[in-house]
Length: 99
Image 1 (cartoon, rainbow, N blue to C red):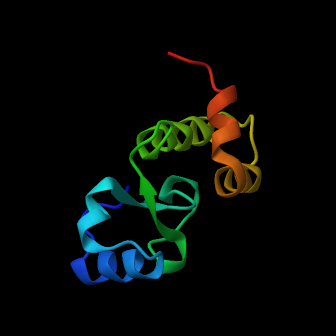
Image 2: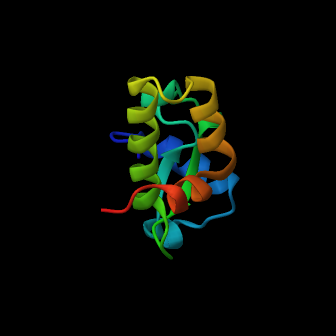
C-alpha cells in the first residue's frame, strides 16, 4: 500500500483502470512490485487492488512480507521474488505457512 499519495495520482490510477470515484474506497493503491522487493512509486508499478473478496489487498501485503523475508534469508533470489509477486501472488499466498 502506498501512503501519502497525491490525490491527482490516485485519480490518474483509478481512471486508468476504469474505477469511478464512488467505488474507489473499495480499493487501495498498491505496488505491483513492493518497495521492499525493489519496486518503485512509478505509476507503471501502481494499481488499484480490491480489499474484498479475500484474499485481497491485505493478504497480498502478507505475501510481500513473506517474500521479503525469504530474500533476506537467502532462500529466494530477488528476481524470482519479483516475478512471483508480479505474476501470481495468489499461488504464493496459498503455499505460505498459515498463522
